[in-house]
Amino acid sequence: MPDRDGYPTIDEMELGEIFAALADPHRRQVVFALAREPQGGERSCSSFDLPVTKATRTHHFRVLREAGLIRQRDIGNGRMNKLRREELNRRFPGLLELLLAEKD
Figure 1 (tube, rainbow, N blue to C red):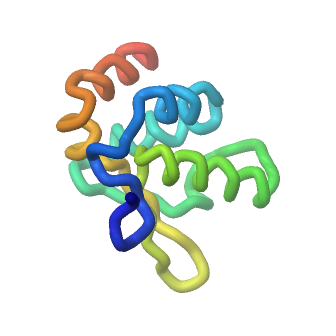
Figure 2: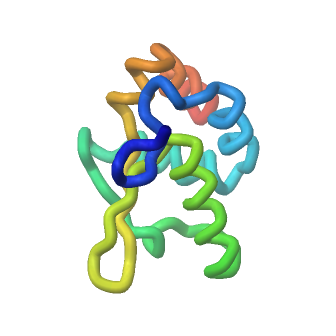
């Protein structure tokens, strides 16, 4: 059962869902960018240079959120996004390093 904010708990994070979310290059781009942020760093949805419509951008962030890769918080009429780095490292040690190695 997701936590009180609707995010999957650490035990509910499934590798298949994470891989499915990361299969899209635009979503990987978001994860790569968030992984480069300092620990706890956040970025707004509009700060990502995704060549897609606003509706498609919203879809991409929903997929990332439901897979457990990101956490979002509302701020004004937008959302801030943060990588769930600590949770991911606990559930799937080494996964983020593997992903970032692909980008290098």
